[in-house]
Length: 182
Image (cartoon, rainbow, N blue to C red):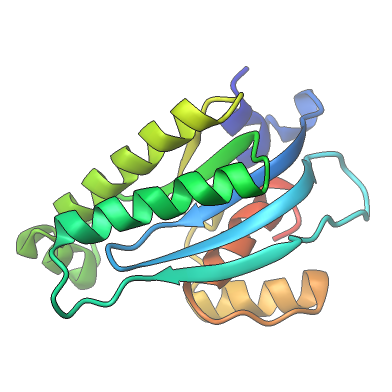
């Protein structure tokens, strides 16, 4: 069974223990990418909740930067984070169109979704080149279902008593979801 299924599928999570060290979770954005470094992640049932050791948002100034230049900068940033933190596995939120969401449809129509998917593909390539484990692509539906940003932030606060803003909150939320703790 693949790592993604064992971490993010509630029905199959208990079938086999997964323990990962030096994991990076990413909430990609064309100009802002949220990230969290996890020294240890496990889907082991119980009360233990693992916390990220570092979090943040990689921000690229929009003015004067083409999407291509921003993407190149983000990929160079990702490569350095993987190397500095000795990352073994990268979990990346995968973009998708939500049929009933006007915002999602607008993103697809404007071309922003294609730009984001291209960046995610580049992140996947960097992670595959730099890490010992294959990158894990997980959709929003798989890691948080229908939860709003505010609901994710509240659950993070409840689980680890920490507060995060936007993109970094989603990166932390992915790590907690992988543990079954979101």
